[in-house]
Image (cartoon, rainbow, N blue to C red; front, side, top):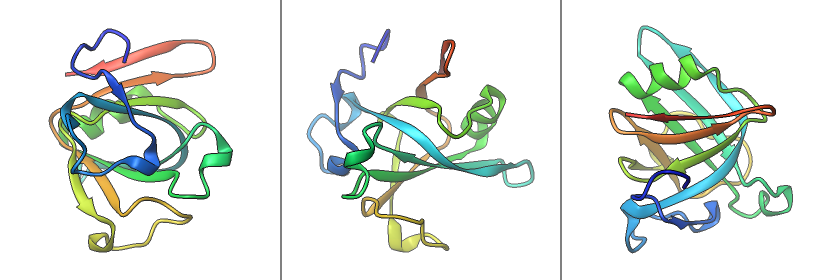
Length: 135
């Protein structure tokens, strides 16, 4: 991950699992395919992320990511939308079993959702520029 020494090993979305060795040094690349609106009352925002290569999406190639608290506000302020490319560090991620979520995510994803609250390292690539969120 550019400029972040703590995220050095790329992992495919289909391989994401909380038992990965060196989990805190892993990251994944994805495309935003669905965005749930920012809730100012709950201070939360969710996105459905998919493998950049559409051929890998049908077999566990997507993951729902929840942002809460200050991470949600930063993601909202960044203006992330469908089609944007993200590089997400797993450092600071909380793993939530998919069955624990209130509503099922469309498509075929992994058995986990990721949740970020106060620690987030995320790189966003829009069509014409590239920005990073880190705090």
